[in-house]
Amino acid sequence: MRKKIVAGNWKMNTSLEEGKALAADVLAKTTGSEEAQIVLGVPATHITAVVETLGGKNGIGVAAQNCSDKVSGAYTGEISASMVKSTGANYVILGHSERREYFSESNEELAEKVNQALANDLIPIFCCGEPLEVREAGDMYPFVKEQLTESLFHLSAEDFSKIVIAYEPIWAIGTGKTATSEQAQEMHAELRAHLASKYGQEAADNCSILYGGSAKPANAPELFACPDVDGGLIGGASLKAEDFVAVVTSF
Ligand code: 13P
Image (cartoon, rainbow, N blue to C red; front, side, top):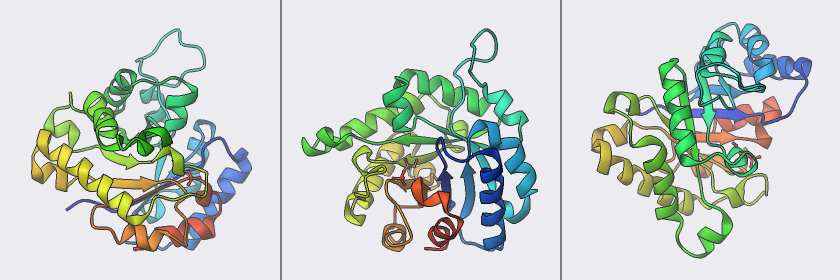
């Protein structure tokens, strides 16, 4: 059966010292017996220190927030999947809407990033989600399904089984406007059916689909009660250990 996962996405926040303190605080407030796998998505500069701070305790995973689609070479400023892996991270967030929007990441480029992550034994947390105008036009299901088709459906069944998906409606990110639990459930069920059409029902049932977008302690219990919502990708509320752990324990 699929895993419950709650991943924090710190985005471009925290100094190194603040990041280490936040990771230590999350560690102190958890026991390792939480129902969900906990993952901290930290700035690349902090991964090694956060991995060290966590010391493998409570099974807490660490994610990078991006990796290159290239193997290595003259790509100034880029960080390859093998470099990420060498820091001790075990996950990588890919295709976040902020990367799609501000860094022009396309579905095709993301397919390459997914390949790089898998080739280096990193678990991709693959983000998808529609902008407000697509939701208002009622075209959100085909839009998000296409993101999955174009970036994931080239994978073998074995590689697909390693993927975690995060549905993040763009209009709900950082806006305080959360998708209703009905909207989240409907989209997650649509996406799971889409995965089943390609990889079969069992593989689709085993895929964790997380919700992201203004998820916080106040709304996490209702969102996580939805049968197809397997956890969350948490932005703002992951920057305070107390709030993040409250979300982690919302199942
Ligand atoms: P917020 O939780 O701040 O809305 O951010 C969600 C997100 O983008 C997580 O990746």
